[in-house]
Structure formats: C-alpha cells, structure tokens
Image (cartoon, rainbow, N blue to C red; front, side, top):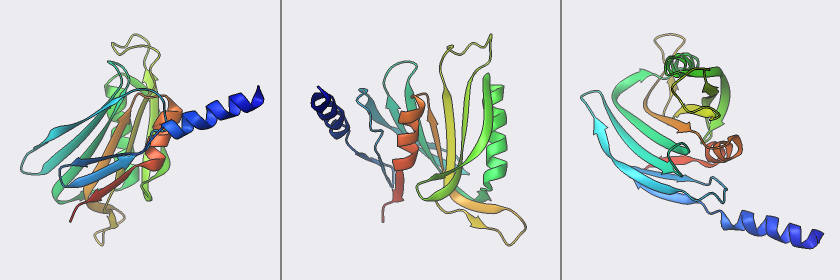
Length: 179
C-alpha cells in the first residue's frame, strides 16, 4: 500500500511540467507544479508614451488565475522595493482586499516583495479567495540621486491560486529579454 501511495505521489510530481512562453520581447518560464488544469494566454502589448506592458495570463476558471505583467518604462522610474510594496499594499486595500505585508521575497534571483490578502467582509469580491501580489525588477540599481533604486523593467505577478501553487510560480519564474 505504501509503495502504491509513493508511486502516485512521484507520478503526480512528474506530470507537472515547466512552461515557456514568448511575451513580446521576453521569454517567460515557470513551473507551477500542479495537476490543476489551466490555460495560458498572451495578450497584445498595451502602452503609452511612458510604458509598454506585456501580459501573460494563466487561468483555471473565473476566480482562479494568475497574471504576469512585464512593465517596460521608457525612462528609469523608482524601483525601491519598500516604496513599491507600500503603494501595492494600499492599492490592494483600495480594491477591497485586507492585505498584510509586504514581505521580502526573492523572485527570479532578484529582490522583490510578496503581499497576501483576502477580501474585506462585505466586499464585492468573492469570499474565501486568497489574493497574492508580488513584484520585482529585472534591472533595478541603486541611484546616485539618494537612497532609492531605479529601473526600467518591472515584473508584477498577481495570483488567486492556492499558496503552494503561487509559491511554486514565484520560486520558478524566469523572465529574460530576447536579444
């Protein structure tokens, strides 16, 4: 019996496979390590004179999914994790999410943050769903202008997958700009 259970455990892990997708000029790869069925879609770039946003959507159903936004700014902007984390925290709260954090999180080998939250009671958002928001920058550098960092390419990851699946995504994601 134990051997059968172990065989099933190892086979379910083996079924999960890494994903690689071209999103504009970026190669995005990740492994959510889940047997949950999902679809991956790339969305046409959106932008204005300041930023171009490249988007990859991972979707299971109407309430479970993730998005990976690659924000490519034309000129350097503030990429200080503490400041970006506070802005994201307040944005989540304004959308009706009782969020805590931000917590430091290494993503794609870079400094970033993760914020988790659930809908406020009485919110119009579906009850019982956990929301995750993470961010890191591909090119953040300490600015000579003061105690801040600047960068031109930020990656925002939003997820309503369970915590283990979200963490698998965050631990495995790689975003590389094609030559």
